[in-house]
Amino acid sequence: MESNRLKELRIKHKKALQRLEKTCRECSPENRKSEFVTCSKCGSRYPKKYLFGSDDDFTPCRVCGDDRSLYSATSIKRIENCQRNVREIKKLLEAEQQREREAHPNWLSDAAKQSINQAYSNFDFVDGEYDLGDAIEVCGEIDGQSAHYVIMKEDGRIYD
Image (cartoon, rainbow, N blue to C red):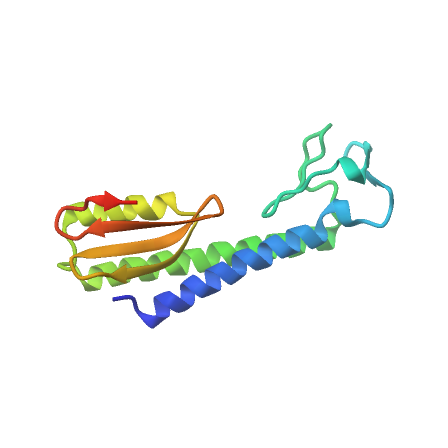
């Protein structure tokens, strides 16, 4: 019961998240050639082996707390562009989901709609939503682990 547009947006969102993680790893101060990394704001020097990056954000300086001072201007632009792209695609995805729910208002009971919204809020990423007749299966990832919920259409009961 899912439109092709919604499927395409889910795929684009997943690819954008992967691109963001890859960019953060590539631009990380841990990958510099020099042995030490210097904070441009406070002047602190760190051996790069003691820096630990994030998959989707900047590594902050441990002294001044500035999260962009260990990065070059180009790296900051690349990461910010990827983050903006993820936000834009997520907005489109949410709008398409809302449009599809409004197009099929009698498809689910209110309790089932609420349960689906709860299930979506638990997932980090949703792989798919499948109509099983009297229930809906929502598959995705929670903290990197595969998970799925089966939601009954009549009363919104959720089964793991």
